[in-house]
Length: 338
Image 1 (cartoon, rainbow, N blue to C red):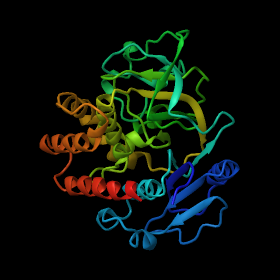
Image 2: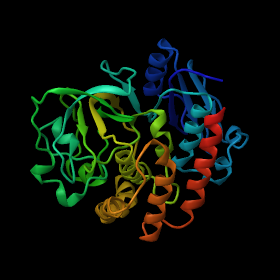
Image 3: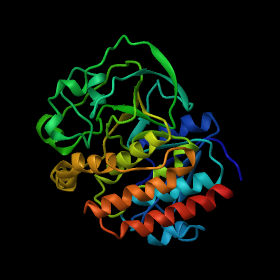
Image 4: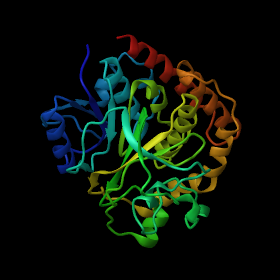
């Protein structure tokens, strides 16, 4: 079975206004929104252009990972990626149930135009789209006032680049950490500046709120289970970027393409779940940067395993993560053959 572009979210709610808006946009272009449920539901989803995969449905999928992933965890979204791949999706867009497309939202192509960012160790992409003090969730706190991390010539020429992972920024309630929310929380709209391309060896955390993936990067979509829900997409982003560099690609960030009407959060709870990142994000990227990986398009899966083996070896994630990584790659290989 081959289908067109596919979007994936996970939720325990009935359709939100944000999902209504996204589903309408997807329906206009013949795309499908896969809804990955969990033990809290939902059990039905009356929304055109969507397909609900309940927890019961997930356990019937031909993927071993469906029985290994924890319930009540964001990592069950991995099954949505596998379903999309098994149906031949040429591109997977992922977002959350509180993000609605803005007027600029469009289905993207892997080849895109962007300004090249001068290489450096860390890049605060958010500050390239606003003058306000802000940083993405997962950015090292010790660098949030370092102007060198966001220095950029805004009038740089646009270049065409191949980017198998692309991230759109979020207006309204951007994806920041609990430190920013506790101290500075307010609504924010980014400037509609040109897209930027981060070269290999330049880190910026990216999330799962408005992210585009193409087949070359599908192995890198894996969300780890043995970490907190506030770190799963961030630590994935570090592993994905490290492996992306070996494919000869950098990361593209676009001006805002969605507006978030943020679900209710316990900010102190978020802070607690982000502590492992505050303490370890810089060290994790150093561990990954020091790895010797295989270059070329056929090595993404092997490199993924090497990255997680290194993170386990340095004590950032438990060894229980490794069987899930291997199962993910086995299931992905099977899904790709369908």
